[in-house]
Amino acid sequence: ASLHPGLVDVLVIGGGQAGLAAGFYLRRAGLDFAILDAQDQPGGAWRHAWPSLRLFSPAQYSSLPGRPMPATEGYPDATHVTDYLAAYEKRYELPVHRPVHVETVHRDTENLRVETDHGPWTARRVISATGTWWQPYLPHYPGQNAFRGRQLHTTGYHGPHAFHGQRVVVVGGGNSAAQIVADLSADPDIETFWATLRPPRLLPDHVDGRALFEIATRRRAAVLAGTADGGGVADLGDIVAVPPVRAARDRGHLHAHPMFDRLTTTGIAWPDGTRLDCDAIIWCTGFRPALRHLAPLRLREENGHIRISGTHADAEPRLHFIGYGDWTGPGSATLIGSGINARDAVDTIARELGGRPVHHRRP
Ligand code: FAD
Image (cartoon, rainbow, N blue to C red):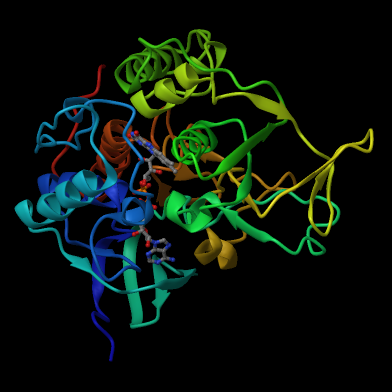
């Protein structure tokens, strides 16, 4: 049966951190809205993280608008975030409907029509906040189908227990790869081999999420002021030295090897003919925005990008994007940054639909 066939001012697709932050501001704006989330429990992508994952900032730097994340000793784990998000949506009585999977979004004269596995919705504005976890990116290497061992993406990693007694190759030069290498290499029964395209660059120990946020804030101010972008955190390094990563480095376990160029039936091989047998390959090769539901709107340009101004699509100003990463706003794919991104989107929508402004802009 259809959950809500009527018209709402704003429909938010996705009930992770970004969708909830949008809900917070939509309440404040006094608009009529609903949040549709594909999962049957709160927490977004955080529900699927591996047990040893630690945030790269202390709790007080990982808060959504309004209610601060409760403090923890050390850096919070994913369960702490999931519990926080569950309490957050309850605290603000956010109208999250789950599990509701959005299949497609269509133009419908004045409004947008959203088709779901629980019937259609109609909305004057849509905010897409579906994250990236659901669209893992896997590069292509010859021999991938011939390899007889196990291959998984970051999204399929649930801890070292599945790899006891094995040799595991971890691919990728970012935070996920480094944290998974740290996790596996702490287990003496696992032989871990790390392969990266470029030598991995660990950020200095003092640069954690707090510092990253400050850099993102400066960058945002520079972008808003129209001055040259003063260079992002990418100039400093790629990997945050969270305590488990630091410990792996100090154990001498954080050595990366040049990337192989093909898979064999039993392992990996390099151009010079060197081979290494392994039991499993974990591809920590990143994510793409999960935007399949928007395909009917045909927003992608020839280069595959969707052009946006502020937070809305140039080719469909009734549609906003939040939380996907620098594409939608500096630092927007972090807990603290998603709040700023959500505020910007809701502020624009509130001004257009006659809601209360949620943000006092500089003149
Ligand atoms: P998600 O959490 O993915 O939520 C999107 C929700 O939308 C999900 O519930 C999903 O089921 C739902 N959805 C998707 N498609 C549909 C659909 N078609 N219909 C209905 N619902 C749909 N950030 C930090 O701030 N600090 C950190 O330390 C940190 N560490 C990270 C470590 C790793 C390994 C990763 C991968 C990310 C990390 N991040 C960190 C980044 C960021 O906080 C997360 O990526 C975050 O989960 C993004 O939130 P979101 O709300 O945009 O998306």
